Image (cartoon, rainbow over all chains, first blue to last red; front, side, top):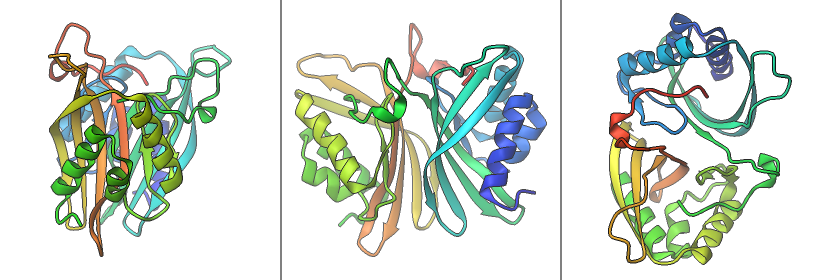
Length: 139
Length: 139
């Protein structure tokens, strides 16, 4: 039971780090309209596909840590949209990989807050830091 | 005035194709919490930054056409989240570029439906079609 979107988000990234599928799926809403978009691949819709996606990531991944930084938020009474930068530190490496940008949408239901959408995508950083880059490229 | 999220979305992609900044900004909600994420670059927050981003795209782009395909939808009374594939056909080319995946969030307000969030990111297609790829990579 997550009392705030922030506690749902913490649980999401803790489950990700722990590669714990049950903990991860406990953060997702129980309805079938959930959608999870991992970097560069097609969307996964519904709990079965979302769980299969995380299972495949958790099986493939070694140990890593995550740092998450809030970039932007649209906050309403029963929904919070959070755009975050995810930094992954893999294994014994000391510096994080180039960041991933994620849009996370949390909804409040009878059982507290759950995630309903996760859209993660790479940030192409090159020589400059991501926050320095404001010139978008053509879609 | 857009009476449905679908008409707001049509106007969004028509403004994109027409490289018409006024038409594009008419589709965006008038509040400052809007956020626009173009592929691979940092988020743009608020109307001034969102408009600057589109201006820079429109100035750089030649002629192109868009094809948009709905992938997934989360539909509520006053909000619709649409995950779409965007196919761009540039200039005189006959086949579309590799698709872009976008999460578009529309909200209903006193003036009808407007977009409040656009998160676009590349789909890495390689040899297979995007819909064939369901194995996500580690973030």
